[in-house]
Length: 254
Image 1 (cartoon, rainbow, N blue to C red):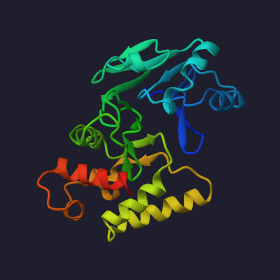
Image 2 (tube, one colour):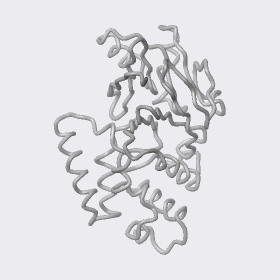
Image 3 (tube, one colour):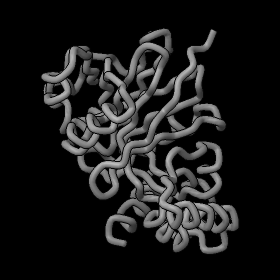
Image 4 (tube, rainbow, N blue to C red):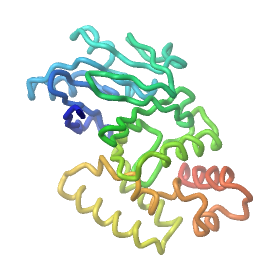
């Protein structure tokens, strides 16, 4: 029997999202950037956090760890290969392994690129992915520590998940990403329609997160490095790694 759960999207600061996963008798927090904002939200809903799942070490993902640890008796997950950079961690998890938490199956996926120790959490029974800063709507994370080859491999791994997977990414970058994506594929009708839908959502104050993984393969240039038009944008390059690197560099300076 699949455990019922709901995911709340909590806006933090200018464009961060923290996620509260509500289960019958527990509450997980994904990447608690800021203690006061997230704790205020939890208290307003009469929720008590039981577990924190961190995707990577950047402050806008782990900034609330220590305060949550002081305020609550909870467990804090971190990549075993990067635990030294995750404040307050109490449980080291291994990429490539599956874990059972509160009756829910969680697959820990190794996705280096944005950082070397970045991981994602996939809930196969619910078709939910917490992607951190690896995959965004119409974009992907900057390469602060990893290489184009690593990030392309990480994105390919995420692309292999079921197409119906709903992706919870940690930033509201969709419209900015969309402007760049239009320069890569100006005639992509799927991109144009999706971007209009997202513009309408933002005009109403709604988040564009979560988003459907399968649809991203139709309009996210970083998942389309094998497509002729995307390769043409990248220039006379010979492999997908080079194409990806060229597109990532173009986005960095866009």
